[in-house]
Image (cartoon, rainbow, N blue to C red; front, side, top):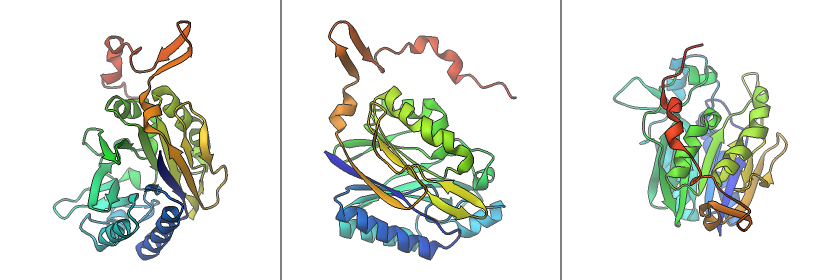
Length: 280
């Protein structure tokens, strides 16, 4: 078994020192409860509701920042892996990215930039991530990462599943208008790929926007192992069994009711999926 924590927390816009302080506290709490991997919301270190690109760049973080050195020190001390959301800047470009970094006891393990961007908050001003979806390993568990709106595109989770992900992490900033997505999409992504799915959403109010929580850790059958069905801060803890996620052949009645959501695909019929969409 592998123990994961999803941290549902409030975030202060632009107050990186306070957000870092709260992150370190929550990571310590999750570690005390046996978590090996601790997942925080989208933009958990910086905040999200920017009105201009310049504002986003002003609170953005470079991966060489002392913030990430502090996080590494904590991960090393606690012997845990943490996934942290932030607005990312680069010294050599004017780009701004909505990013995640996974840091473990030995340093940075994985880095991801959001690939699907809604016309909402800071995503109006950031650059799309271009790297291929990929998985990384923690204690022989295969892990994939997406951010918020990415989950609305089933192809992204499917690619991670095809690459062997046992669990997909989804840090997010779902506001009240997205409550149907929060309720419906994560269990479907878990069930249709027979993988674990971890949602870490924020709570609180940022610049007039209210965030709804609904963080959860989901079983490959689509049921919730643990669920914060509210908008209060909470650290969710659940154990996952990666071997279960790898058993894609599901036998309900031997020879009469069997399915395999990977082997039963018909990719030769799916060509339209990779065609450029018609503009509406």
